[in-house]
Image 1 (tube, helix red, strand yellow):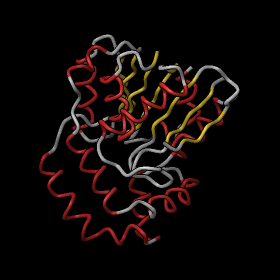
Image 2 (cartoon, one colour):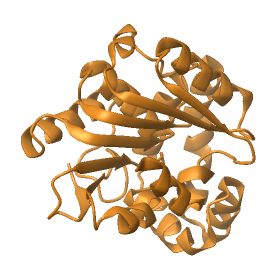
Image 3 (spheres, helix red, strand yellow):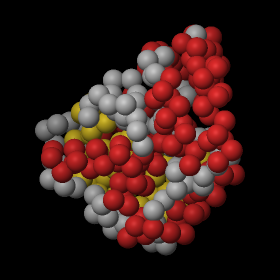
Image 4 (cartoon, helix red, strand yellow):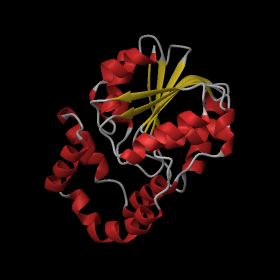
Length: 242
């Protein structure tokens, strides 16, 4: 697994898992803000630009990250945060290993399967994949995602490097993931965050996760869209972590 690290001299580890179609730079600003106090580890998720493995499943990617934590971090870390696909992987990690971290921040994790969307992804992306490498199309997608402007070059460069097979694989996994019963055994202090302007499915997903973990906190960021908490408000995100 390929990772980017900040603050390696610090003992306490914060790990942040980027969203699908993005990469480690999703959390670069947070890492720069936190690195004087924490060892910040930014894994590149399977199937994404810079990764050393194709994407197979959320479960397998979660297992690979747990193996890294076992090998390099003594079996657990201080905090893990994740956005969207990264948040689904985090939910899965908490299901596979109840004590993998002391704190967790689950941002915009979809956990209500959509079989129709799942079925449409293959045909849709098979016919339109070529557009992803067009800068004009990337700009349209970038504006739709409401990502802050200074990240466009990172977004365009890395999105264009994702293979069609990997893009379809992680998008399909994203549409049908649901939490395992073992998630309820999670021992971490968990914050569940969702934007108030996200799709209703995302709000329902956040409520479902909160119901499974009654001791968790549910935060609805009323004026925010999908991913804008961590991507567009890094100072707030970093301050909320500590």
